[in-house]
Length: 463
Image 1 (cartoon, rainbow, N blue to C red):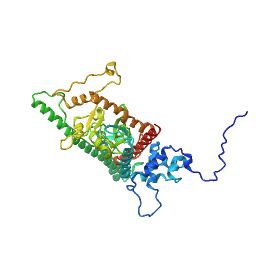
Image 2 (image 1 turned 45 degrees about the vertical axis):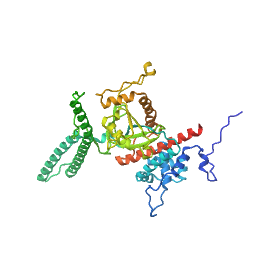
Image 3 (image 1 turned 120 degrees about the horizontal axis):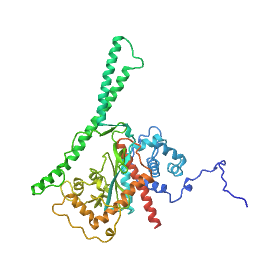
Image 4 (image 1 turned 90 degrees about the horizontal axis):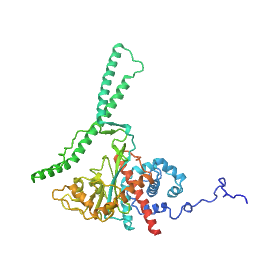
């Protein structure tokens, strides 16, 4: 009996138009995204209400296109445009229309308020479906590469050196110009006006870079001043009580830039940051996310800080009002801890308790569990009257409640960043400037949440 193959005929055309719904399974995520977008507020989107010019693509279609594309690892506008021809699900979203990359890019950059409103409405939807798990929220940050090369950056010290060098070259060119005028000759191959113009423009750019770095240093010093004053006050209180403060005297924050402080000419608002395990540096942004027990992102923001030490209050404040009232515990790693940051979260501006308790790991612990760790442990002794805020936090983490809560952190927020980077493939921003980067991060988190909601709904339906 001869081998039989399925007949593959690429020459015979389809005489009847196909229904794309027949090519997509009923449980495909694209149906869930389209149903969700129908429930989102669309009045926030920027449209041409006058009706002049070319016809516009409907905002609901464009939003569904962006969400599905981001959820499936396509971020560039040209890549998304190409998918409208080659991907059946994308063709279904666009109803066989093909938005060009310029339209996709313009829609994305013009609709930040709409993306924020959609992010909030998706959390409403999750709440209605009873898929959120609030009470304890984990906050973490991660570095994502900016759309800029670190080789397009200059340090504060190097910028000063280059300005001095260029000014000497300008003086040398002026000397050559005077000699050429006196001799009524030209130096072959040297366009003195063009060279002067180029160096003057470069000096102006470097001076602007130094001014920005100086302004950043002053802002950072102003932000760190309250924590410094709180440390001084605590030490003075200990001395007044007849006790000797432990540790070194706190150093006042300096408004003077460090020699290695950087400025990037491609994306000036991005920063050189330690990435990965701290073994290399990237031109990046610090993206922050607050995640609930169901691994849904309930708060998102973008920071330009190279570490998380000052980020806790702002990241907690970024939690959506939809769920903020239900947050009772905030779980963070050691990078977020400072006594001032914890106090800012646990106390209202008038000094009354906020009702939120922070659990921050302030001591390193081994991943290996010894036999003693596996056996029931006695309750840790309460800190003494001389204990610092850090000692109290360490005790809080050692209690049975603290250990049970903190275990949730590595099960929630860390996998979320892993999914965004490895499954969705989002590792670099396409837009530049902190405002546009924040817009793109909101879109990433919105797409992730709908992808996660689809998974949770599917799991609930299948038992």
